[in-house]
Length: 267
Image (cartoon, rainbow, N blue to C red; front, side, top):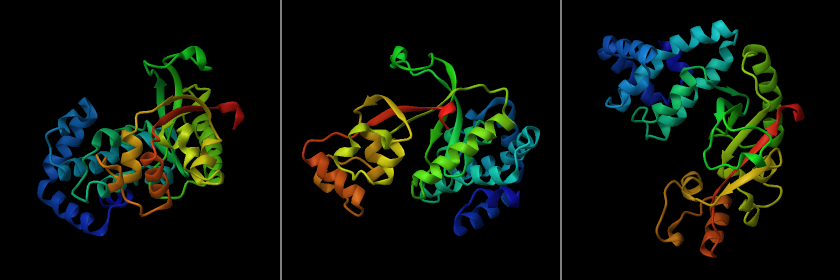
């Protein structure tokens, strides 16, 4: 269990509290981890955030078995599980609240490869006009997620994509797909109105063919500012991104998200 705790990348204080918690609740933790393996993670819905964290850590032993069956090395497992620590920090180190997200990692359906994360994904957005896309509704794709905590350097993303292409061909050859896809505020087409062309975010956008745009701003505001404010003048200006986005919104601009794709044969 201690090895798996290290994989999660927890802050020192939370790690110490978790070890003490496991000593006191070990039997229940293992029982819930086994239940999650057999029946899914819904049994964690009424658990405390600390119990959710402990169970997810205990579950990594099953993930490790899956990785061994797929021939995936421990370094990918460690990098993938480090997302647990990020989401605990997002929860003020009170434990793990967002277990529905982390279950993708634990079920070996999402992998962190270099700078980016890659999730097995049947593209089935109901609002999309698939006649404008090079693939059909429900087709297998790989969804790109951008974990927080590091600069978004284009060259590192390209290297990640190349490694991911080889990774899926080697370890999941039965999972056939032709496109990487992404839906994110980072791809929003109007970001260029308040960002410099040389910015990491706009450089990241150039990797994608942008197909659709949604002007709903809630997710972008959450990622840039933390939470939505009724009065736009109350948004923080601690970074150049915050300053630019705040001025843009005060002047009537809208934030949002865009959906884009990358053909596998272009990598």
